[in-house]
Image 1 (cartoon, rainbow, N blue to C red):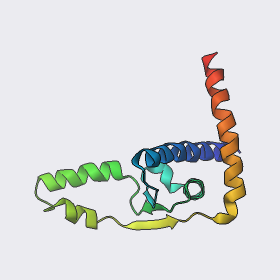
Image 2: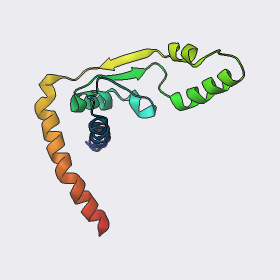
Image 3: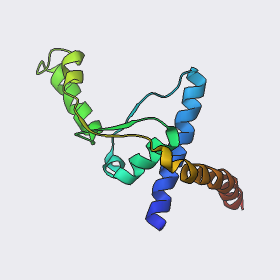
Image 4: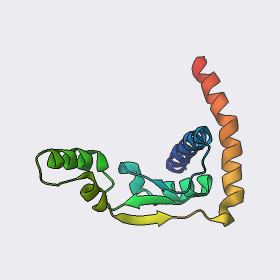
Length: 126
């Protein structure tokens, strides 16, 4: 239960941030490409897709920080000729689609989140 709550907290926090960014841009989210170690967890990405109502796309190589540094070094020393060549090397592992059947669960999570965040902030203030 604790691990699931932590994963849901990550998903809700990211959803809040991405929705804010989307609003600032005045554009809807059509797809989110993710990376990093946490993206190995499918439950996290399924929850994220349900919360955002948009596909979440995980690459074959999730540790892209190190990969990006290596690619830029390779580009700098001439191993690759262009950023386009590097972009073409990106490969999708799995796509997580929103499940409309999870709407009630997602709505309940959002309600709980909107109540819990101010309480946690107040608790932290002492």
